[in-house]
Image: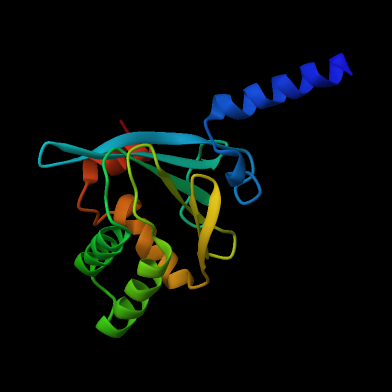
Length: 171
């Protein structure tokens, strides 16, 4: 029994060493940190972002997870609004589609306070699963939404290129 507990402790230590939350593992195998950075807006620290991918190597068509750990209070509505603004700014989506996505995000995103983490997981099927501190809070089945949503941080047209570079391990 003592040997089993030791092995479990080692395994837990290995999982924590990669930094990937345990609820990511069923969706992103061998998830390890690719990169991390902080979003600061007008001198306010908003959130810390961390990207996880298989073996720490991000590929846009393979599963990955992006965790945002908030450093300030924000309303879920404001998070949904900003997400759609960023998707709109990147172009390529009609207003009807954006309105539908906005409605779905408003239903999913909770109000957050400091140290609350929201995680989006890009799945093998191109869907997005959302978690709040490890608890599933939503699932969008639309691969087009998933590509547009994660492009907010990972796309070449992101409004935060320095954060993108940090997330992708380019800095």
